[in-house]
Amino acid sequence: DAGVIQSPRHEVTEMGQEVTLRCKPISGHDYLFWYRQTMMRGLELLIYFNNNVPIDDSGMPEDRFSAKMPNASFSTLKIQPSEPRDSAVYFCASSSQGTQYFGPGTRLLVL
Amino acid sequence: RKEVEQDPGPFNVPEGATVAFNCTYSNSASQSFFWYRQDCRKEPKLLMSVYSSGNEDGRFTAQLNRASQYISLLIRDSKLSDSATYLCVVNRGGYQKVTFGTGTKLQVIP
Image 1 (cartoon, helix red, strand yellow):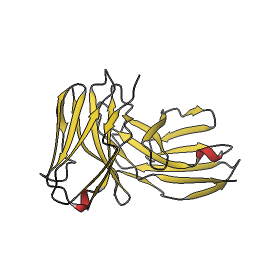
Image 2 (tube, each protein chain N blue to C red):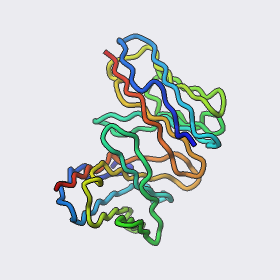
Image 3 (cartoon, each protein chain N blue to C red):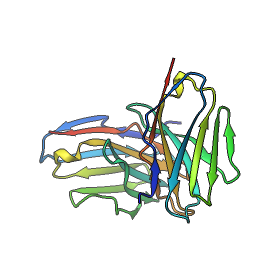
Image 4 (cartoon, rainbow over the protein chains, first blue to last red):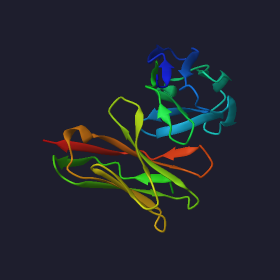
């Protein structure tokens, strides 16, 4: 079975541009998480969904960030407008019984 | 105080050595505990769950001390392939929300 799939794997953009990150969770998993990892702050939970419904978005840094999960097999994390401080690795993870399985991440660089 | 704290290391140990990491957590209501491993430029992967009675998986032993609110990971007979960052993870009972520690870096040297 395929693991969590994320795209793109790398993204380089300029400040002010819109960035959309995509995630396909493992089939059958009912929880989906978005994390951000930086050297300074480690791995931070941004938002998580249960059965496609956002449960906790308290980790979303500001209104420039938004996430959606239109169906059980797809989620997006959007940053609009992007800023250099958004540069990080963004991970998507999914779970069904507690153990979270991570995707390979998207490395975002905002110039 | 951070929810989950770890010594960042790095721990540099020779092959064959035994090394132990500790992780402290602040919320006494926490009920589930895990160790994840993250290789350089890769995603975190579950290493093992931590059970109240302690548990072992090959060369790896995890223990939980609820009274002192810490968990530990012991690696025996270290291999070069054990070089990675080890992340302590704590969640709360029925909640899926977890907190990751910032990780302890291990470098096993020949």
